[in-house]
Image (cartoon, rainbow, N blue to C red; front, top):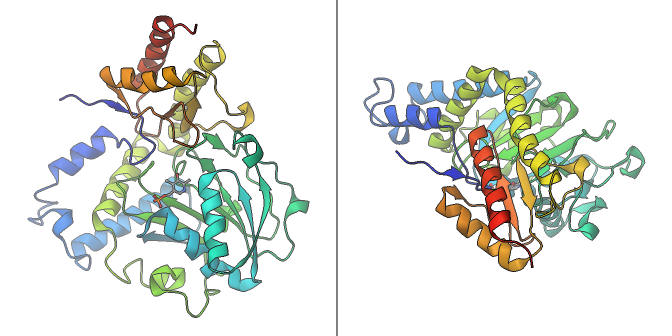
Length: 363
Ligand SMILES: *Cc1c(COP(=O)(O)O)cnc(C)c1O
């Protein structure tokens, strides 16, 4: 078997033990005589899978009973529309913090639907190299919610604190950092995340919503975007993304087996520190993100020379370090080091970076 170290931002690496379990259960899931892909979502055997997935996620993230956990389709992107449709009914207004491309898209989607939304802070001026400062006085007192993107996948930035929004519910896109470290769910009204960065294959999106926020959806909200309808039907209003939910369950069990999110965080800090320590120790590569906004999951760096930035990912691929090319809006390189990336992958990357710098001096 020859597996590469895959630094893709998403879809991304999954833990090998999870893939092995899925492989062993592929043809006959626990004596059912069929694959999870082939099962009715209404069957008792599948019902146990989705219930165990929810129970494991609740345990892992310590989700209180007054929050619903939904397993939905449409990616994180469809939630950009679902959020205002479900929540803005309370006051008719909402605030957004623009910290990168995805939060910008969330804001524009709400505008497109004709909602009264306001951008209260942005780091666009500095090409999103930091998390904008948010203080309580910036928040509209009559906002139904404040939307943030907790980890900015493209730029490699992350909130190193949870903004205090007082009584106004905080809504956070955690697509690229969910279950990478413990988070206090009670500080949020809604947490949502597409699965394909750190949780499962593409297809399922998790929405964790505080119960008292359900019931404000506009009357004409499409059924598939109506969180209350989905919650009342246990995420089974229609066919859920069955197989992705099954893999998510295996991933949650894998982390619980390691020792939960405290342990996961310890491993993730060790990996990210190794890479950032190297970046800070030399001047061949430049890490554009401000130190207090650095992501544990997505690490961006450039050489500053276009030709070398192009050569780097191509050469890295030859030694089994793949998908290191940065997003087109940032350029350079991006190493996504989600939960499933082993420490050895990061060590091998840093070794490669040293060799590349030595072999390709800047003139
Ligand atoms: C990838 C990503 C999205 C978009 O997710 P889809 O599931 O492709 O819609 C949104 N927000 C963040 C932070 C992401 O990383």
